[in-house]
Image 1 (tube, rainbow, N blue to C red):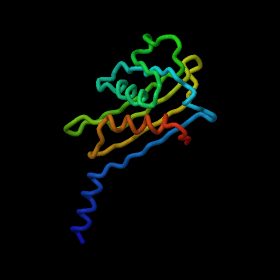
Image 2: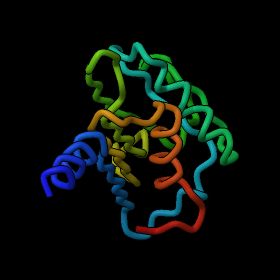
Image 3: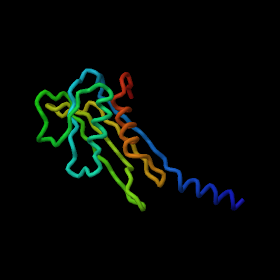
Amino acid sequence: MRFVAALFAVALLFTGCSSTSTYRSPGADLAGYKRVWVEKNLSDDHRIHEMITTELKAFGYEVDSGFATMMPRGIELVVTYTDSWAWDFKTYLIDIEITAREPRSSRVIARGRYFRPGITNKAPEVMVREVVHSVFQPGKKK
């Protein structure tokens, strides 16, 4: 019996729970936007903005990225993000949240978050892909 309890405890220790949440403004249709700007965080040492840009280009958006002061005219949607990292003998991403806003009004159109704490982690590219797909996937409404 002790062996089973110990085995269960070890399994819990090495299993990381993950969650994805998505919000879309009522009536929001992300397919109606064409030009997107991914705003780079000043503290982004992991190139998250490039990962988001790559994923959005795969959906067919015209995407550029950089600091807010570099945003060109004609942008229809601004994507911002926050990322949280942890260190347990190596650095890994535990939380990524992206927000899509209209540039003039700053009205939030959509928001998505992927949270995965724990020792067993996913590559940052996989976590970014999952949260971008949960927010921008055509026809997906949550």
